[in-house]
Length: 92
Image: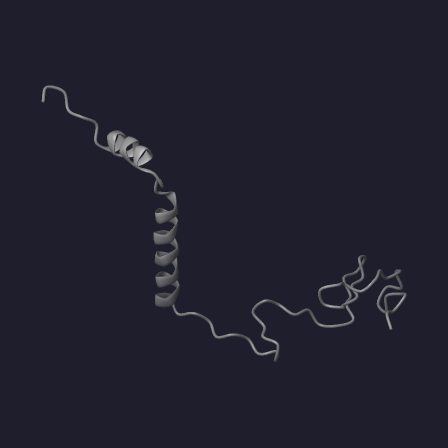
């Protein structure tokens, strides 16, 4: 059953949040339940942190995928890109 008034500042509380069911006071920030973060699993245990090497590997993979997504998809665009990167030399 939802509360009507904040237990901390007595401000009127709105309806519970749809995503979590928590009631949060808009005035002071009080909540009837602790906030669940993305780093917290359903059991309440924090997920292990990534090592520096794992982070570098993920960033390199993301950069590679981003470069692949930026490549032209058709031959005409690819030829135009090649011409811009390697203009024909005069006199040949």
